[in-house]
Length: 188
Image 1 (tube, helix red, strand yellow):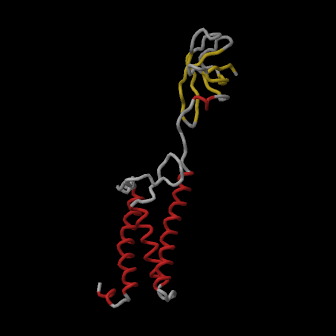
Image 2 (image 1 turned 60 degrees about the horizontal axis):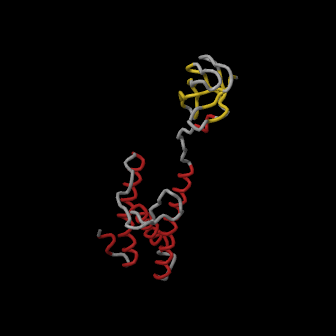
Image 3 (image 1 turned 120 degrees about the vertical axis):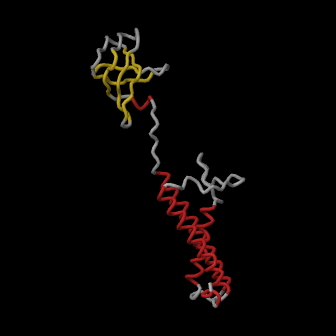
Protein backbone atom coordinates (compact mmCIF):
# COMPACT_ATOMS: atom_id res chain seq x y z
CA UNK A 1 0.00 0.00 0.00
CA UNK A 2 2.87 2.36 -0.79
CA UNK A 3 0.55 4.32 -3.09
CA UNK A 4 -1.59 5.36 -0.12
CA UNK A 5 1.40 6.38 2.06
CA UNK A 6 1.93 9.62 0.12
CA UNK A 7 -1.70 10.78 0.49
CA UNK A 8 -3.13 13.26 3.00
CA UNK A 9 -4.18 11.41 6.21
CA UNK A 10 -7.90 12.18 5.68
CA UNK A 11 -7.86 10.95 2.09
CA UNK A 12 -5.83 7.90 3.14
CA UNK A 13 -8.47 7.13 5.81
CA UNK A 14 -11.24 7.32 3.21
CA UNK A 15 -9.29 4.89 0.99
CA UNK A 16 -8.64 2.50 3.90
CA UNK A 17 -12.40 2.39 4.50
CA UNK A 18 -13.39 2.27 0.80
CA UNK A 19 -11.26 -0.70 -0.26
CA UNK A 20 -12.48 -3.30 2.28
CA UNK A 21 -16.06 -1.96 2.21
CA UNK A 22 -16.11 -2.28 -1.59
CA UNK A 23 -14.72 -5.82 -1.49
CA UNK A 24 -17.26 -6.91 1.13
CA UNK A 25 -20.04 -5.22 -0.86
CA UNK A 26 -19.01 -7.13 -4.00
CA UNK A 27 -18.98 -10.42 -2.06
CA UNK A 28 -22.45 -9.65 -0.62
CA UNK A 29 -23.77 -8.78 -4.08
CA UNK A 30 -22.40 -11.94 -5.66
CA UNK A 31 -23.76 -14.09 -2.82
CA UNK A 32 -27.17 -12.44 -3.24
CA UNK A 33 -27.25 -13.28 -6.94
CA UNK A 34 -26.22 -16.91 -6.40
CA UNK A 35 -28.81 -17.33 -3.63
CA UNK A 36 -26.48 -17.68 -0.66
CA UNK A 37 -27.87 -14.59 1.04
CA UNK A 38 -30.56 -15.76 3.47
CA UNK A 39 -29.36 -13.42 6.22
CA UNK A 40 -26.28 -11.47 7.12
CA UNK A 41 -25.77 -13.69 10.18
CA UNK A 42 -25.85 -10.91 12.75
CA UNK A 43 -28.79 -10.24 15.04
CA UNK A 44 -29.27 -7.02 16.98
CA UNK A 45 -29.98 -7.29 20.71
CA UNK A 46 -32.85 -4.81 20.42
CA UNK A 47 -35.88 -4.16 18.24
CA UNK A 48 -34.96 -1.93 15.31
CA UNK A 49 -38.22 -2.26 13.41
CA UNK A 50 -38.69 1.18 11.86
CA UNK A 51 -41.87 0.84 9.85
CA UNK A 52 -44.22 -0.68 12.44
CA UNK A 53 -45.10 -3.76 10.39
CA UNK A 54 -45.00 -7.37 11.50
CA UNK A 55 -41.87 -7.97 9.46
CA UNK A 56 -38.79 -6.67 11.26
CA UNK A 57 -36.33 -4.69 9.22
CA UNK A 58 -32.93 -4.59 10.87
CA UNK A 59 -31.58 -1.04 10.95
CA UNK A 60 -28.32 -2.13 12.55
CA UNK A 61 -27.07 -4.97 10.40
CA UNK A 62 -23.77 -5.81 8.77
CA UNK A 63 -25.23 -5.11 5.32
CA UNK A 64 -26.35 -1.62 6.37
CA UNK A 65 -22.95 -0.94 7.94
CA UNK A 66 -21.27 -1.83 4.65
CA UNK A 67 -23.74 0.35 2.72
CA UNK A 68 -22.99 3.27 5.06
CA UNK A 69 -19.22 2.80 4.86
CA UNK A 70 -19.40 2.52 1.08
CA UNK A 71 -21.26 5.84 0.76
CA UNK A 72 -19.13 7.53 3.44
CA UNK A 73 -15.77 6.52 2.01
CA UNK A 74 -16.48 6.97 -1.69
CA UNK A 75 -18.29 10.25 -0.97
CA UNK A 76 -15.20 11.47 0.87
CA UNK A 77 -12.88 10.35 -1.93
CA UNK A 78 -15.10 11.92 -4.60
CA UNK A 79 -15.45 15.33 -2.93
CA UNK A 80 -11.91 15.52 -1.48
CA UNK A 81 -10.58 17.82 -4.22
CA UNK A 82 -13.76 19.95 -4.29
CA UNK A 83 -14.46 20.59 -0.58
CA UNK A 84 -11.53 22.31 1.12
CA UNK A 85 -12.71 22.11 4.75
CA UNK A 86 -11.99 18.70 6.32
CA UNK A 87 -14.90 19.05 8.77
CA UNK A 88 -17.34 19.92 5.98
CA UNK A 89 -16.00 16.98 3.92
CA UNK A 90 -16.59 14.57 6.83
CA UNK A 91 -20.13 15.90 7.39
CA UNK A 92 -20.86 15.62 3.65
CA UNK A 93 -19.50 12.05 3.66
CA UNK A 94 -21.69 11.18 6.66
CA UNK A 95 -24.75 12.52 4.82
CA UNK A 96 -23.85 10.50 1.72
CA UNK A 97 -23.38 7.35 3.85
CA UNK A 98 -26.76 7.84 5.52
CA UNK A 99 -28.30 8.47 2.09
CA UNK A 100 -26.92 5.11 0.89
CA UNK A 101 -28.64 3.37 3.83
CA UNK A 102 -31.87 5.33 3.15
CA UNK A 103 -31.82 4.36 -0.53
CA UNK A 104 -31.28 0.73 0.49
CA UNK A 105 -34.34 0.98 2.80
CA UNK A 106 -36.46 2.34 -0.04
CA UNK A 107 -35.30 -0.38 -2.44
CA UNK A 108 -36.11 -3.12 0.09
CA UNK A 109 -39.51 -1.53 0.77
CA UNK A 110 -40.33 -1.55 -2.96
CA UNK A 111 -39.18 -5.17 -3.27
CA UNK A 112 -41.47 -6.15 -0.36
CA UNK A 113 -44.41 -4.69 -2.27
CA UNK A 114 -43.77 -7.31 -4.94
CA UNK A 115 -44.47 -10.12 -2.45
CA UNK A 116 -47.49 -12.21 -3.29
CA UNK A 117 -49.77 -14.07 -0.89
CA UNK A 118 -50.61 -17.39 -2.53
CA UNK A 119 -52.16 -18.98 0.53
CA UNK A 120 -55.46 -20.71 -0.15
CA UNK A 121 -58.59 -19.28 1.49
CA UNK A 122 -62.05 -20.82 1.15
CA UNK A 123 -63.51 -17.33 0.74
CA UNK A 124 -61.67 -17.05 -2.59
CA UNK A 125 -63.96 -19.75 -4.02
CA UNK A 126 -67.17 -17.69 -3.76
CA UNK A 127 -68.71 -16.93 -7.20
CA UNK A 128 -66.26 -19.29 -8.93
CA UNK A 129 -67.28 -22.30 -10.94
CA UNK A 130 -66.07 -25.83 -10.49
CA UNK A 131 -66.86 -29.39 -11.49
CA UNK A 132 -68.61 -31.94 -9.30
CA UNK A 133 -66.11 -34.68 -8.41
CA UNK A 134 -68.41 -36.81 -6.20
CA UNK A 135 -72.18 -36.52 -6.49
CA UNK A 136 -73.68 -33.93 -4.13
CA UNK A 137 -76.87 -35.24 -2.43
CA UNK A 138 -80.04 -33.10 -2.49
CA UNK A 139 -81.01 -30.41 0.03
CA UNK A 140 -78.20 -30.68 2.59
CA UNK A 141 -78.73 -34.44 3.17
CA UNK A 142 -75.04 -35.16 2.70
CA UNK A 143 -71.84 -33.88 1.19
CA UNK A 144 -70.17 -34.34 -2.13
CA UNK A 145 -66.93 -33.00 -3.52
CA UNK A 146 -66.11 -30.45 -6.19
CA UNK A 147 -62.91 -29.66 -8.05
CA UNK A 148 -62.27 -25.93 -8.26
CA UNK A 149 -59.32 -23.91 -9.50
CA UNK A 150 -58.20 -21.01 -7.31
CA UNK A 151 -54.96 -19.12 -7.80
CA UNK A 152 -53.71 -21.51 -10.45
CA UNK A 153 -54.11 -24.70 -8.42
CA UNK A 154 -56.96 -27.20 -8.34
CA UNK A 155 -58.55 -28.06 -5.00
CA UNK A 156 -61.01 -30.86 -4.17
CA UNK A 157 -63.38 -29.51 -1.52
CA UNK A 158 -66.47 -30.70 0.35
CA UNK A 159 -69.72 -29.24 -0.98
CA UNK A 160 -73.44 -29.25 -0.23
CA UNK A 161 -76.44 -27.95 -2.15
CA UNK A 162 -79.79 -26.51 -1.10
CA UNK A 163 -81.56 -27.89 -4.18
CA UNK A 164 -81.76 -31.20 -6.09
CA UNK A 165 -78.92 -33.71 -6.31
CA UNK A 166 -76.01 -32.67 -8.55
CA UNK A 167 -74.34 -35.48 -10.52
CA UNK A 168 -70.63 -36.06 -11.07
CA UNK A 169 -69.26 -34.00 -13.95
CA UNK A 170 -71.81 -31.17 -13.60
CA UNK A 171 -70.62 -27.55 -13.53
CA UNK A 172 -71.50 -25.70 -10.32
CA UNK A 173 -71.08 -22.21 -8.91
CA UNK A 174 -70.06 -21.60 -5.29
CA UNK A 175 -72.59 -19.36 -3.54
CA UNK A 176 -71.19 -19.27 -0.01
CA UNK A 177 -68.90 -20.91 2.54
CA UNK A 178 -70.62 -22.55 5.51
CA UNK A 179 -69.57 -22.49 9.16
CA UNK A 180 -68.22 -26.03 8.94
CA UNK A 181 -66.10 -25.19 5.85
CA UNK A 182 -68.52 -26.77 3.38
CA UNK A 183 -69.06 -24.91 0.16
CA UNK A 184 -72.68 -24.32 -0.75
CA UNK A 185 -73.06 -24.70 -4.52
CA UNK A 186 -75.75 -24.51 -7.17
CA UNK A 187 -75.87 -26.03 -10.63
CA UNK A 188 -74.96 -23.70 -13.49
